[in-house]
Image (cartoon, rainbow, N blue to C red; front, side, top):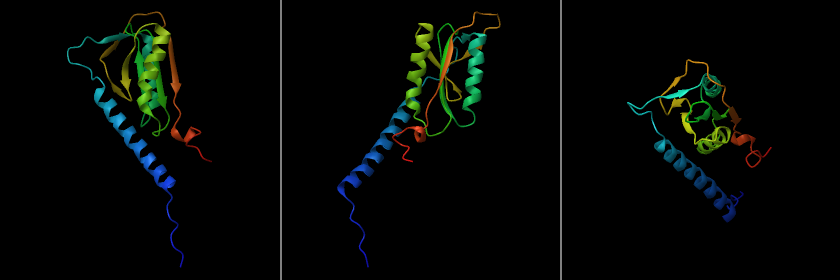
Length: 153
């Protein structure tokens, strides 16, 4: 009869480190979820341009049914940027900062999150008049299994 191989200290430390990393990720996600703003009653709706609405519809089509992402828009409603992930195993806490920063680089104005996943964070309407086309961009985030550190094949 063979005795089980003793677990080394390093193996236990690795397992503990992974569990700790997962616990901290869950805590960050919970904090982000609680700090998001919900459209306030009586708040003036943001007016977005036709081209921003087209970009928003493109974003919403990409994240359904269970993908992750955020959509940022400039205060004038003319420019936007979104980040989405094609898989549930992405790291969404970073998306808001990336989308707002990239939107700022397109518009030169502090941007706000209009959608987080498929939930609106602010009331908006679409401008029915023809407006100048703003600047829009997007980025596909990489799922964990596409990252070299997690892909051990």
